[in-house]
Length: 550
Image (cartoon, rainbow, N blue to C red; front, side, top):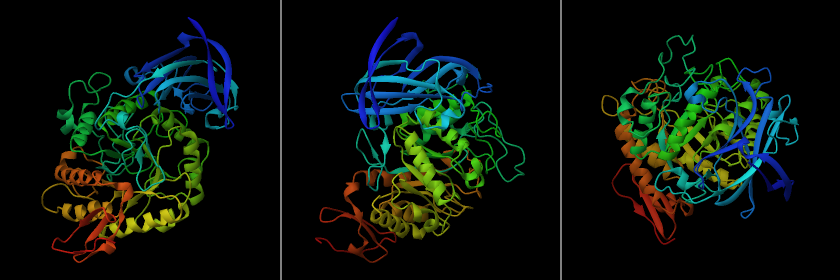
């Protein structure tokens, strides 16, 4: 069947009506739930190629799709990707003619789409809409109608995209709730999982790291009938682990999307660990199964895009073609997830200019305006974060501390005040409290440090206005940062974290400020909407004097 449609487009700040184009409806297949914030997928039949094709399908082709809602005056330019046979996660295919875009519509009503499919040397990394030459299904267009979401509770398809909105807390665009996170910072190589295609340990780690891929066997029992798997029954351990964490009330998981030459040496999106511009279609489809389940569970995907050992790996640390391509593939495949947060790197050593360039490129590429943060070494906060104050595309801190977690309350206040004074308040995430050796220990004896962590890292930061905590497991104990197989090893920690999250979510967060000047005695801290709501924390117990009415 053939049809013609008018499409509304955005060009140079002006809404334009694009002349009708005729195309075969079969050229584009729309799948998914046609509901606000749900994943809508459009798959096009294009040139047949492969991951190793002479013309690089990732670098020398570019699919972008413009989505327009005329009533709401919305226009999103969404990057797409080469999808092999369209079922690579199940088939392991490396070749095919499917080209795909995922879209999470931010509004209800009629949406029009128009594809831009171009080819040329390095066209994929260009933000110039005219780069390269039109080819294949270029200009294919159509429309679909989006209804309201039918989700409730934790599901991020109910809450909508999580964004920086000029305040200390990120906010969901749909539910308008502010986000305070609690979750797992370990294992950082969460995606180094035995059931993913083409995933293995790179030789040469010399006993310093876990020698086996993750299996998460203790969590297979947490998998439920109806939960996703791939290639038969693969994925049950990882899916079960996520079920367990969500059931404890957690809402975030921190993990590297690339650790080549780093600590774990078992996570990469490419066809080979030494490849840089060819992506593994089947592995990334399987990642998408996991991330989709996370979205439904209400678990934020916290993408740590590099670590200190490899933050110079792509383009010598610059924003060059390989880094641009890496960012593009991540956004194209996974940017539709509402709860996604992007971290520039763990213990980051890029320069100020490089970090700003990364932020600027990501924000221009990303149609959903996901929040961008950066992690750094303890004691390097001023060096790394100082020059980012007020930068319009940087959204928050990812704070690591040393063993002295008593500094966290004052450290949080310091950077909130500095960012507010610079005109762009930041979200402050405490992402790695505690020493590298211990982090936060497993439940029980012999060396439990949960009281210290609860008092200073969790409540200490939240009482200063932080956006929450993710717990790092150190390297000293079983189930540590690289070999954790069972999140039940910190079962009591999740309970303590959940209690704090539930308490703070009941407060008018965006109207409250640190107000320690209102309390005296026993190291008490105060978080208040002056004259209306006052929360007091007594880390040492006992009593304190509270001044009210001012």
